[in-house]
Figure 1 (spheres, each protein chain N blue to C red):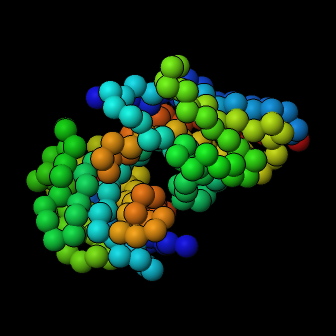
Figure 2: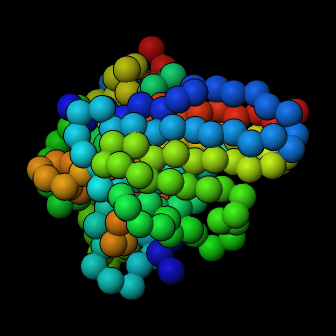
Length: 118
Length: 107
């Protein structure tokens, strides 16, 4: 089946620094990737949708200058949290959708990245 | 705007008992709904979608447009069904998730 990986699985950084999270589709080409944020005991909230080779579409209330998304290839999207603050601490999850078969309608989720900003 | 509501944050049943996880939605168009499951320490994965009208791991879900519901049901719960379940609605490519129901199946 389709597999999506994320790296790192967890990261601790100091306030004011930037952190990059990678999302990769391992065995399929992902034309669209999605970034979600999940607070403890809460649901997944879509942050942005990115299509390969074009600018990401951000959800209302998500700061595009703070959460930089790059989808440079059909297998890789990155989320960079710039000038991180403690309130950015959260669980970040990516998902990917392909172009054919089941992957054309199903989003495959990564395992998530736990970000802690101290 | 679309919205998905799962009224129960926690649901606990005994093994062998029937289980129903409730999901209601609001959407102006023709909805396409999904159930996702997240087992302990695992990633979110698709359980079933209403278009497929399939039964996965004994679970079924029927779309009721009149009641705007998409409840997930299983006649005989198993301990391995214990997990977090999310109902989701898709619009274009955007998934909107409910808040999730933590199902615990007790032995």
